[in-house]
Image (tube, rainbow over all chains, first blue to last red):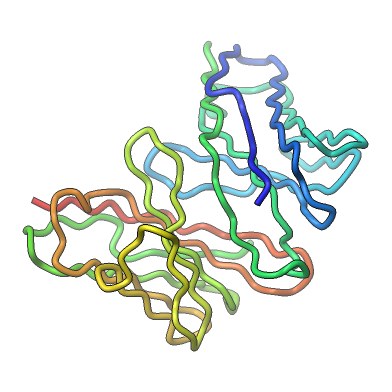
Length: 114
Length: 116
């Protein structure tokens, strides 16, 4: 299983763009990168998923360099409600490589200040 | 989007009793469900993987006789904490996914278990 490394915490201010980087040096060929957001006492919520280059949806962008050994979650113009823990997961969600066992790392605690 | 529910959302029980937590996929059929445990200010720890109609696969260090998992249908999985003790107090979260192309995991809201 590819291990992920993220900063433990980050601080930002309302209206700023926040970039959270995740390292996954031993990512496998079939692995995708998925990011989740978790508020206290709630289950994680899917944010975005990608395989290479750039993926964008209504809430975030995901940048993946050519070597795929890292990825960056970009949150545009954060607000106070974006204060949460963000998790980066790496794995093969198609199951082609066998059973998909989603494993959470420590995550990044983002605090957005007024 | 796909919705996963958990019941109850919180439960308080006495030491030595058993507690059952339900996880339901409300608008899709979940071929696989996962059970996690999360202690305060820690990450989610995978406890077991549950496939419909088969025995659950437990992670190393998780006692299968203490944490009984049943995945009787494509929309329901249950976790029973048997003979609960205060150290079992935690936040239990389930997730569900289907195996079609790129499957997302959809998480339930979690169940807060407090054992007195």
